[in-house]
Amino acid sequence: MGFALAAWFVLAMVRRGLPALRAPDAATRCLAAGAFGGAAAVLVASLGDFQTQFPVVALPFAALLTLPAAMAAAMAPPVEDEQRPWLLPARALAGIVLIAGVGVAAIPLMQSLGRVRDLDEYGVTGATASESLVAQARSLLPHVATAVDPKPLLTQAEMKLREAARLDPLYDEAHLWTGITAVYLNEPQDDVFRALGRARLVSRGHAQTNLAVGSTYLKLVGTAPVPYGPPDDGALQALREASELSPQAFSAAWAMCVERDVPLEDLRTIVPDRGHAKILLYDHLRSLGQLDDALNVLKDQLAREPWNEELTTRLAAAYAESGRESEGRAFFDSVHAAWPASPQGH
Image (tube, rainbow, N blue to C red):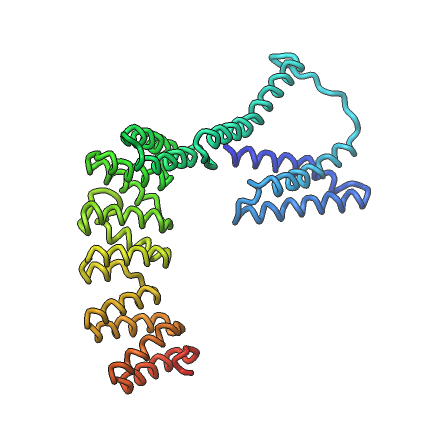
């Protein structure tokens, strides 16, 4: 519908503005051609971007598109206004349009007043209704530790979070905090996993949400699979996704898993193919006395990132400490042969 209205407006303005391109006055023709050209540039750019959703672009575009039509109308001989039958008198129609316009204009004002009210009551607010509800719920949680009976606070927070998730099913934090609050309320584990699974499904690209879901899974069921979320999901899969998105998230996930004595093979699962992550795995393997395995970790990663100087330094030091300088030199020569600009050649 929106596209149809926009197309109708553009075509109508072009049809009405074409006579301006045939005006006897050269200045009028040039001005009309320039206006049409500017409007066409905006339309072409809109094929790859949604620029016209911004008033700073939409208003000049509308002005450029209507300018030739206005000039053509000014050149046309005056005609008497055609009498058209209306269901209501003209003044009544104008009043209805005015009331509708005021109502539409009042919507942002009422939303702003609602945010001011939220700030007065909770000290927080958000850009949308869902974000406001999540912020309000999270503002209640710090008081749980000092409350004589924390259940009413948790119940109130959970109600706000479930409403936020209902209003915006794609808002991952609403599902995440619903699950965390359900844990504190000792609700059935199935309800907890259902909320956290929904958070995982909509949290693509959000490191902190995946980290929080993974850590919650790890506390509740360890590395066992969970019934909801992406296929074969669990703590390790959530922590791996968070680690791939953010070095800080990986550091937190690694420390969490090491603290809980997660087995080595599971630790490998959360390590993304990034130099900083492989160095942590290398250090851990060395601490376990698995030097050959540790060297292979760095060598495999250096084949992916031959420009990584920290990997090069760590690997060279490891070869030197183990008395395998000749083996190290042969490996670095092979890397330099494949990547002449790599630091191994200097």
